[in-house]
Length: 456
Image 1 (cartoon, one colour):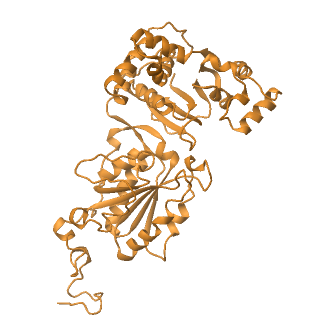
Image 2: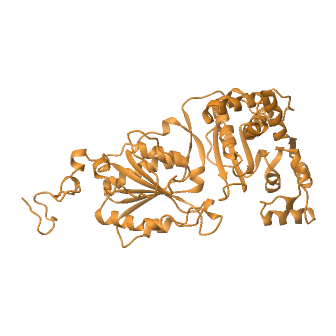
């Protein structure tokens, strides 16, 4: 096959994202180009979450509506994704869920339940009927008792059942790859990137045990293309973080404190505190250490408590515009205001980013369209804020923040932006002094010198 889409669905907090990351990395280690998208609810635990991993022999730029392989880690996944597996596709599921009915799925949206009731002509259809609908659509069902397999492997390894069941996501990925005829070695390498210590050892042993089982071979078959070095696997948020470093960022703050989309900047000769501090570097909050360094702020459009994030920054943005201070704000837009919407993507902050604030002042707004754009635009935002001494808003959204994609490493290069070098420390240290110096100094004969200023 030249193109393939794998989906895993289950309860939030059940290791769904880890499963997708393992699958994507294992395929990447085998030479496939990959891209991953995620959908999840704002609830911390229990609500439905799913991720798609699309594979191709050439770089991936989009996703398909129909999937080739669906891994259902719970009964709700069967109910929700009926009709979304293509004819000839595969459904991997735990047979124990077939004893449930639609109304015994407590987290299932009432609209989905009502649609299934109308489809099957019953008030409370069972998941056996849902499974039969998959079969009638040409989907091959593969029953696979995840928990029983975990218990059996745990007993063989001398591991308690509770501990063994924590590897259900690894079991699901290993079973998928084994069914598809994919080699074990790339998965072991992916596990080594994901886990450490005893957790890594346990998950690798579990994967090896799954591969020892006899499984039916499918018409769908995925072979390794041969590992090609020089590729990186990044989310949009990670790409933005790397772009900031490539652009010379030395100070970063977050609000909320964790940032959004897991934008994490490595520690080292930089300062990246969390918490509710705002524009420390750009506004000269810590003159001794941060003054004259490029700094930025990362925030999310909404938090799960439905509070808007960009609006409270209007005061700081206005101050930065008034004193002509370079300021970069990275905004991950999300939906709202409404319970449940803050984990849905939205681009509703565009006009506020362009027009919001106290009065008019020059500002620039960049909107990234894909993962590579996020890397490049982060550099441009820092450079342009420094060049024009104004506010630059770097707009992204929830979808792009959590979208992951493999990219050629050579594409992640620092841009050559003329005239964007930061001031030498000696000049920068005098920017806040009473006597104009450095970038704020007027030439001796400047006609634009303020009234009362000495002209020499």
